[in-house]
Length: 142
Image (cartoon, rainbow, N blue to C red; front, side, top):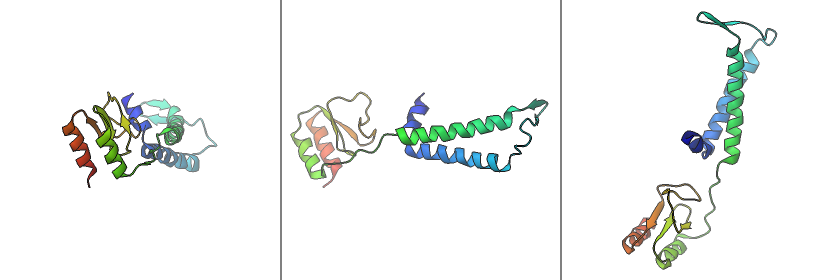
């Protein structure tokens, strides 16, 4: 389940699934002999009709999941404040709070340690004391 959540957040993974599925569909559609759809394939000792059907279903599933991931992946939030404005807001806000230096959003509480807007874990800082406030201001640079 964690894998699906992680992949579901990534547009790049969606494009990879879409292109991978299309890369499988092209040889299936171009080079398969559709005049004999019930041809029996030998896999070891067992005869199987499911190999081309399974390959086709996998490719279609990859295309559908890729399109779903691309459409439903969270968009990057637009940053409406300048670094100077963010620095002023950090200096004026009473502690404790969380701030994301990536998308400039503020949170009163955060249980996961990641930004609720852009899902960044690296740029989301907890400011629980004046020392943490100095760290956040230093992380913004000059």
